[in-house]
Figure 1 (cartoon, rainbow, N blue to C red):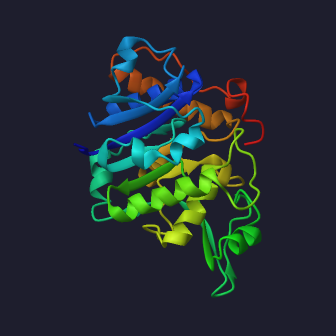
Figure 2 (spheres, rainbow, N blue to C red):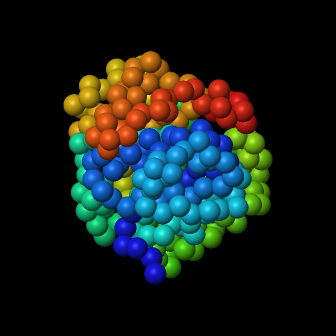
Length: 286
């Protein structure tokens, strides 16, 4: 029987992701004792002690060796009826309880950050130029016979267990496993967002809101000032450290939040944020 609600993290193969997942879980638990499950494979938790592993409420073993390959199976992996999936390299911001965040999504079936949309019906192209579709959108829309296509990010995704969501995630897996067009390589694999974008269009799985942006990701805010902590805590629930490198200010914010959370949980903060390219050799470009 599935549990009512909780947060899912995925950390496959590389201990780097296990260490980051620990920091994320501790940052959540320091705010509220809320259920957190982690899906793992290989050596991802090999650097963690038994005490550190015990922070997770449930450890789920998967055969997936690629993180993006596991992400397209988040529906299957989740032990919850209502799930908030969060990438391991995020940190929970300390002013919002997870339970309150879930309450704010009551009645919502699916929520995901949207960066843009293109519609052949209206002729409007609002795709974000400093993000990506992970392939040529004209080829994608032709191959899949689409009239509209969203530009999604998957570092944080909310979904419930339902027939509609099951069909959507089945389509995500089908597209991921056999893409009809060439894709940009991501970590030696097909990008999961490529499959999410197309599956959403085919199944007409519309996002909760076009402007749902619970994660602050500096890479999309270049040229803008980094928010004050007060603004960051008010406007977002997680800080994303996606990408191969971080600005010193983002590193400092991440490490301060993680260190404070570990102290509150009476744990030693051992795994400071480090550039991903130092540990994840297959991540060469993104």
